Image 1 (cartoon, rainbow, N blue to C red):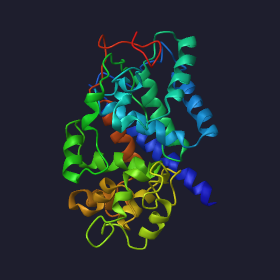
Image 2 (cartoon, rainbow, N blue to C red):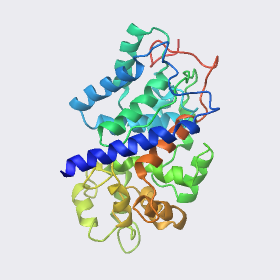
Image 3 (cartoon, rainbow, N blue to C red):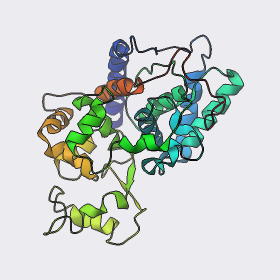
Image 4 (cartoon, rainbow, N blue to C red):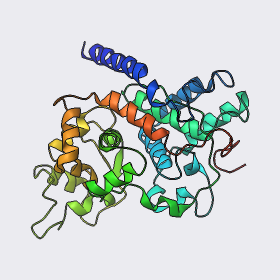
Length: 324
């Protein structure tokens, strides 16, 4: 019964989101159904590809979501994160742990056999991010397509990606630079409801953070648990779920963890300690409620239209990892 109720809720939210998201894409140069005539199988091919890889490796869903985010914040949502080469975006320090490229390549290969030279890698990535949310239990949304692929990819351009030590003011500035407001910030960072972090990105909070010990914003009862997972001078590459207790399910428990002082990354926990972002977190938790699934989809549509290339700009890559 509980599972049935959950499924019905997701279906309701999906229908609500599909009904309201269209007005966000007008005038962006992209539109829902862009490939309806030129490649009508595009969404089904991307969806089946994501599901296939997810069955083999459930962690790939969070990886694809992160890949799209990192793409959009550098040169816009143009697939430039996918390009191989010396000093390309994927070689930048914040991007070296990104993965999921094989899923995009798999979908692209299939699409090139059906619709050669038609579907951009940037659009495949945007669709795959949506499908990654769906396979982890989140609601779907209509993805506007029509992006073209960028032909520039520089590691130096990744320097201004949001970072795990950023204050809320810095996070807000970086998001605002992309046309995203405070609610978008909290919603999109809420994507951390799925996925993991390496110990090396947060273990500094557990030992000698202050003269009296760990970061005081961490719930004291949570500190020993994290220290057991990430011992001092231990393996910094060990992975820990960003949403303790629900790292593989797209839900609101991430926000409950922030409220309870159980945020893993310092930048995440600051969303609760800062007044302006705490208000949004509380609303996602039901205080003058916002529906996280709906708002996440809306914010993803906004983000996926950041600095897009359409019309005759850019190109349609035949292989996602290299410029034509």
